[in-house]
Structure formats: C-alpha cells, structure tokens
Image (cartoon, rainbow, N blue to C red; front, side, top):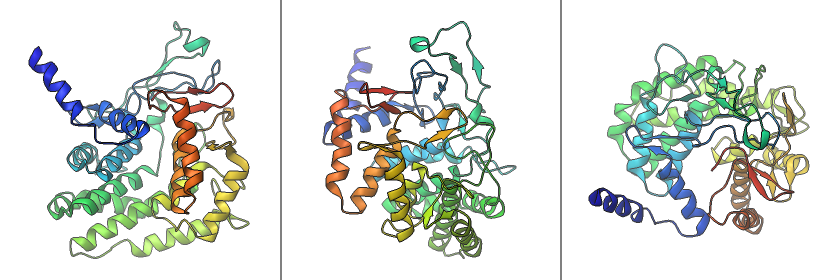
Length: 364
C-alpha cells in the first residue's frame, strides 16, 4: 500500500510543470480525467448538474467525446506531453470504423464501446430540484460532422511536434478513409457541436471543421510523399461555405441564418481562415455585439429549449485565444483574470451564472 501511495505522489509531482494557478489546474484536470487502461479522457466526471438551476438542461458527460478527447490530446501535445497525447490518439484511432462514418458516434464509453441509451432517473429530484437526472446521452445517436476535423487537427499537431513519420505511415489508411468519407459527405446536414435535438442543419462550424479534416489529411499525404487527393473537394467545400454561410459580410451560425454562434471563434484557431480576415473580423464584431456578457460569451442566443441564459466558458476561452492572435492581450487577460477570481481551486465549469458568480453545468 505504501509503495502504491508513494508512486501516486511521485506521479502527480511529476506533473507540476505548468505555471500559474489556472494553467496548473487545467493541466492537472486533463490528467485526472484520463482513464488509464485506454487513455480515454472523460469529458466530465459529473452528470445532470444543470446549466440553469431548476431547469431541464441537464446532461450526462461521463463519456469520451471524440471532440473533447481530440482537444485534450492536442493541448497536451502542445505543452510537450507527446506520449500521453499519442496514447489518446491511439484510443481514438481504435474507434475508426471503415463500414460507416469514421467516428460512428460522437461519444463512446471509456473502454471504447458503443454508448448506452439515455435514461431519466425519475426517482431522483436532481440538483436543487433540477430534474430530470439523466444517465447516458442521446447525443450518441446524432450525426456530428465536425469531430473528424478536431481529430485530424490533433493528429497533425502530434506530427508537427514530433516529426514522427513512422506513426503517420501506421495510420495512413485510416487518414485516407476519414478524408474520403468527409470528401463524399460534406453536403450532409448535422446536429454539430451544440447537439441540438430534433434539428439538422448546414452548420457553418461543422463545414469548416470538415474542411480542416481534408486540409490536414492532405498535409499528411504530402509528408508521406503522396498526392493531396482532396484538394479539389476542399476547394469546393470552402466555396460552398462562403456562398451559403455568409450574410452581410459575416459568417452565420448555419446556412440561411442571420444569427451567429461562438463556435465560429474556433475557425481561425484551427486554420480555416486568418484571424485578421475581413469576414472573420466582421463575424467577431457580431459575436461581441450579440453574445458577449461582460468579458464572457454565450454559445448562441437560443435553441430548441429556449434562451441560452449563461455564458459558455470553452468558447469564452476561444475568444481569449482570438484576442491574443489579434494582439489584444489586455482583453485576453481580462477574460482569464475574471475566471481566476471565481475559482479558488483553479478549476472552471461548463457555464457561468454571471449574476450569482457561480459555475453551472457539468464540472470541471
């Protein structure tokens, strides 16, 4: 027992690399949510903590999402944790299905199994009366077209950091399958990153991330001495986006809409367009005008369940990342400092109730 305890202490002391409370907290959480046998990251270890206390936006996030797992892998690789990042990539690569969409589900169990059905536990009252309490997540049944782009971005980041051509060669056939599937299917509608239920649209964020998948796949092929097979398809997709998802000079939430959502903040972060591109700058101004609450930003104004009441902190930090790339470091630091004030543990929740100063939704 003592040996196991000492090994545990030694492991965590070895992870005290990050500087600053929030960075160290984030770094520790990323390791803390990894399921050691498979290296699958759990999106959140909680279920049914409400986005708005007393309401029904209560979801179960105790799974390995393709999107979240790819973000975790890319972030760990970025700070030099390439071995752990590669383990996560290998977990995701093991899920690639050659008989369907590459990632057939948006989320999986930590063992890589198909997710269970969503069930409401009616006998539980929920946090502060916020029913229903859900286990399982029906989003597993959705078509989400952006996830392959997040995965390919993480894979490319690994190669940028390591130059590991042997690994690229090992995964070549899976990369080709992912890109071929995306190339044939980018015209589909989906539920996208926000997982709206009962709605399928041409979401701009999904289309852009499909472009990212094709772009990174083409780069992988060139590094392997092969042809970029998807250049023409990628150009058609990009043209479609700018012809169908732009209104009055700014990118919209989906084709035919006049609204914006904060997922659009990811586009320059993942290389779809330059942060100083006029279309993006107009999109940014629209997001700031319509979705910003103090230094924070909402996901969108409303969805199938009504108003989105609280800012969403992942996209708020994407906003900070955009500000950094625009040279607006004071504005970026304001976002981080305001989060720092709220979090004595250096942890950040899903949403923020600005009036109460409390995190809401699943945590951390």
